Length: 107
Image (cartoon, rainbow, N blue to C red):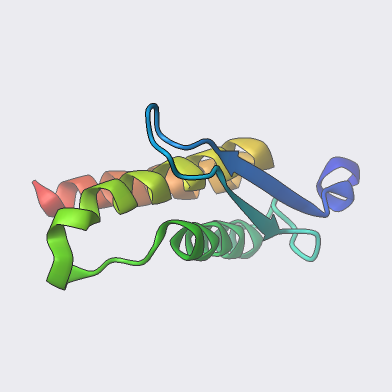
């Protein structure tokens, strides 16, 4: 419990794309109230990371699909960075499972 309990929140910083003029983006995912060693805690942590990434990168806007790809890439990068920073096997497993399901749904 020591490492998981001591982890109050995760700050993720994503630099602006190469050559872009935009400022770096950052997000904080609070996980101190979760037990990342349980399925329910891991699922909530992953959902929080996805919500935080959507706030930073922008939500899906199907009316303006031209802008969707950069936003989706930004969200994916931030969620992956959050998952890596949590260093929790169940969170990583949940994330990998949702990514595989998303690929299967597209293909």
